[in-house]
Image 1: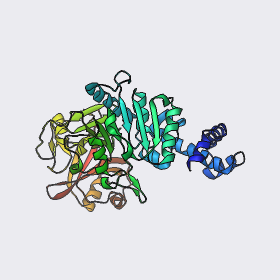
Image 2: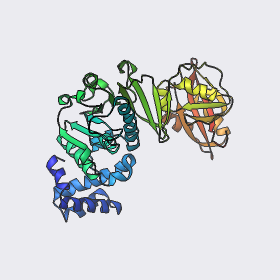
Image 3: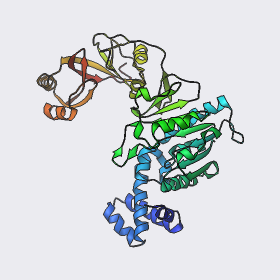
Image 4: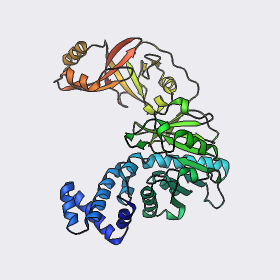
Length: 405
């Protein structure tokens, strides 16, 4: 879809075509039947664009909730867009930056002036605008910039948002209270995990951030530690137990590692805790991935009164169950030196027919193991594959609920 085809969707005829596309898909029709139905009443190009947007809106509900029903997307833009609760969390943190530095002239109470240098379809600029910020946004792709502008209008935020098509390097971060950057992480060959292949590249993003009063840089959660700039705070964010991204905050005066859980908003920061290794106890704790990425496993071990099963593995063990949202807790029923034959025999002896397999520090192919176990019982179990010292182990476990602890 090009810019002209997208603009046609914003016209009255486009609104009608899009509404019909949504209705046809909600009726359960497949894409071929839906396309045929739309083309009987609308030009082929408009029908195709409407059907694409209707499909993307359905996919976008996971990230944007009810807002998805009036928003516009591209497939790549939706994939990279920040989930709305995560964007809202960042906007709330931005207020702390403004409160410390003073808001830009003309901004609302607690708000500030933000430059979004890689705005995409607008997930973050919408959250910032809703929080009262004045947002100037740029994107190199004309269609993506047009969609971001349309999304601001659809949600009644146009008065706080200015979107233009431009290279990020053309913007002046020094004129704003905060620079936000979400560099593109997709290339011709698909998603890239190498920050040097971001667009703009990581060095270019850091150079822009160095000219800003404060900056927030969204990156993939697996960013190498050696690429984190000195004096920054790195925050890993987990949403409903899944690590979504990392945010690098500069110019805020905070430098410690941080993990954040959403939707609760709980945060954990490094405080120099140390955890010693020890024997596997009755309970096993699996720390949330955001805390693992932030190297805060020792803080969780301290929280639950536990120890590490191995100094290089992010599993904690203890002798009593402690309820915490920072870790899932399992009761350990068996600790087995790993072998397929031994594990299969133990599970069959217990009548286990389904297993949840988790692993850290293990090279075992989980799906192949699942097939090779050939289980048929009615029970269920959690199998944790790990390493203790130089030996592979399998821990048979059952989940501990809050009522158990």
